[in-house]
Length: 341
Image (cartoon, rainbow, N blue to C red; front, side, top):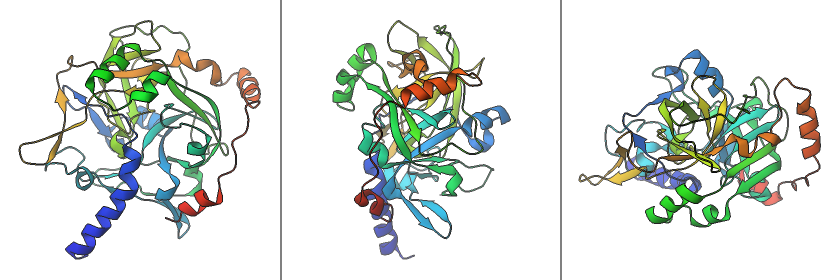
């Protein structure tokens, strides 16, 4: 491909993908960058990651030769990253993350799925990862790993938070101290094949100093596992703060207890991701382990009553009660056409 055509292709891809990423709330790295690719993670972490889902707009998915192709762009090219930045050569494309918590229920952030129209315009893709060293990211999936939205079961987004995302550090600091819950539970268009719902911690016993980790899609990258982090402040608010290494695109990611592997909350807010370097390119922002306000995580206690209990007879009852919620309208013809770009 000659330089002109390559530039046009990059610009076209960026026009599709970057507006989606702009909705995500940007985070940062604390101390060492602890993010691991799927193939670098332990088997136990890989098993959890198999139940993590990436969220994509319809316009970025195209059916071709029996598979669904995911429209992506190079991380480094899209954000003008400096040479040597971690994951620079990998593709990005997902706009948020989520987790399977019921046989057909995904948990994510409320600012990722804002209403039924947004839900109808979103595809939920499992298995966007790099499964071997030196391998390429999986950017084509079969039907069993791609799902649509049937309806929003329950959603909550603090009005103060929803009105001020991304408007400056002063407001961000206020949000980290005062904002309410931010979550959405989505019923998919069918039961998920070959992947297990993950358990949540219903004991409400999280405390400062507890060790945690997160699994999601920072900046829309293939799935990453990030640990070696802890709870800074458990507090009495709707959220707790941490020093997890997370970015935009991690919004909606499940945060796990490192001892029990149960879900403690949903990653929803944080600090700055990228800064300009003297060389004229961008670098991923790093800070000390205990610096800044930290990353905000909506507590699982805010929504656990709406999540089926795994292996319990209560699961069916909970879903049946929630079925009283009004069904989402079918996707419009216009939205259906957008999948073909």
